[in-house]
Length: 387
Image (cartoon, rainbow, N blue to C red):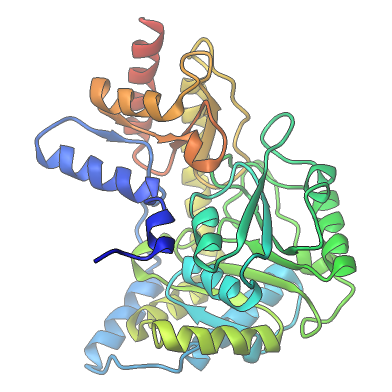
């Protein structure tokens, strides 16, 4: 008995694998500092907790409509108008079991076998594997310098087989933001060539130093129901609610209808309990997010200060998210080897850059405890520089 070719071709999620390894080593009593995670150490919004308890106390947690409950959809419509400047209806919204499912829903509805999906490197680890799952061809584009691709570099990879571009900004793993001019040109290219544009906006509120993330919708010449732009977001990062597994997509009604049909055959519907909590989170809104941003910015600054003490690394200061993506190639060009070495020798977990399509780098998170961030990077410096 053999498993399918598509299952055999997939790699395991590096971040989930490292989470499991860190947990195992901690249970064995080892001193492990986890700087590889993607989960903020921040209590959930108070209103999210209240709505969760209200739902539990009702003793009725049931199936919901496939694309999400109306109350949450209305909140997302309001959130979309306030943050993107575009008016949408509940029919443009599909609530899903996490932003990852929303992206996969989109790929299933947009990509035919052999179609190409273009995205810049470094990229989130799941992009290549999800495109493979729908029998598409992932086309990562590596920047000629730095960690942000130019528009011309993306454009040069567009062919007659290109079906979609996927863009994550601020970027996981670099924390860098693609600017307005870049996004405006990408939107124009997609509309001119009839290519879908998937905006992975899961970190778009987690920005520092007065930065903001341009809305792709603001550059579109089309109405939402004619648009080929699909925006994906959720409560996991912005509201520190990773375990609730609620994401959503904003798209044309045609795409939303197709994504709802697909979702209905895979997971039936998102969790009733989690949707109630998400209504609470969106009700609390920016008041919560601003507190978390202040906390993350402080941790970002502490991380950058420590990283810059390492003699031979190169670092572009993160503008958002809770990740940095430092270049350690002067120490070891093989990032997987270096990451494994840091776990085994000093008990510090990082994620190898090879998983994000950029060798020689390590993704180091700053969403954990500040003291762990400082101690972990200090241990890396002492190990690599010997002082």
